[in-house]
Length: 458
Image 1 (cartoon, rainbow, N blue to C red):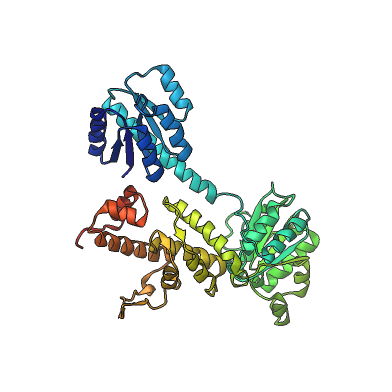
Image 2: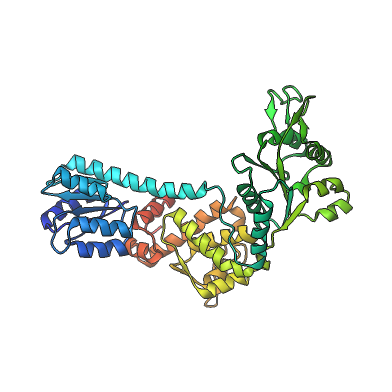
């Protein structure tokens, strides 16, 4: 349910608006002056403000300007008993969503409120989506190894030199490849990514080089391969160490001659592609074992970039953690949680076998399961969800069967439900107090209660 603030110095107007909006199931708060209204806006988390223009102590236009300076995306609907076209235009110029005259027409008011709330939701969603579809996320870190990688990218990206990126799973190899493309002269052409480990051996040649209609049983039409799709741009071959021997030979030929032939075809097709490859394997050992071609290795490794594991750059963990906190809390529509110095030290002490990917999942888990401030106790309690639950006051807490969760989303929903249920029961199902306790909007908490089907006394 949306939370609305009414600022008006007329008690009758405030009472009427509150009665109308509460009947529509909105959560409503009101105040009789702009000074207190701005204080509530700064401290609260409102979805909409209805503000009178002519008030004592502070003019409504001033409230509008200062309120939007605090919360730029907060919709304002201005109301006045002395409304003129000039006033409405001035309010719109200052950023108001709409202008309503007193006494307000019930239907028009409700439509305006609904439209303003819809706009606010769309603005928030658009911000999240813009961040999610942003071309390349920043390469975060102040460690010497990260600075060296950034310097290498700056030097190598403008050239057409082939690059081999090495490093453990989850360390950020794909991000390096994206930045190589982003800073290259090919940035306006496509970056095509292929995970060689995720494609069956019998299909990878078709995936890379394409095929002609009828070349094999399921080839019902011609298909363009990744080399052709990346023409003029960059082809990122992730986990190239898992590529089959026959495909390695064809990739080597494509790199030598800048030509490919589709599966089942005879025509040679010229391609202009810069190849960036990545692997979590030691290719020199793979060559010794007969699993990887030495000549292909020399073709793809003109420049070598090694991405260190997170345990080799622990000093970057605080910066990464804060960034993930802001991103994930923004996605959830909640205030950014704080994290104590002791909690950051506890994070730095963990082994991080899954590297940055594991750290991001850990931060998301802490956001869901912790209170307003994430402590070192939270880190120790939630660091490994498959580990035994900590003992409290000499009594072992109930164990959770983690095998029943098919994926992290299911576990996350389960943990979120249990946490909200615990907090509601602790606060005797006082929704307002619980929302404040876990630092989310009451409207969001009501949505969670409905989503998880929580009921008092269950």
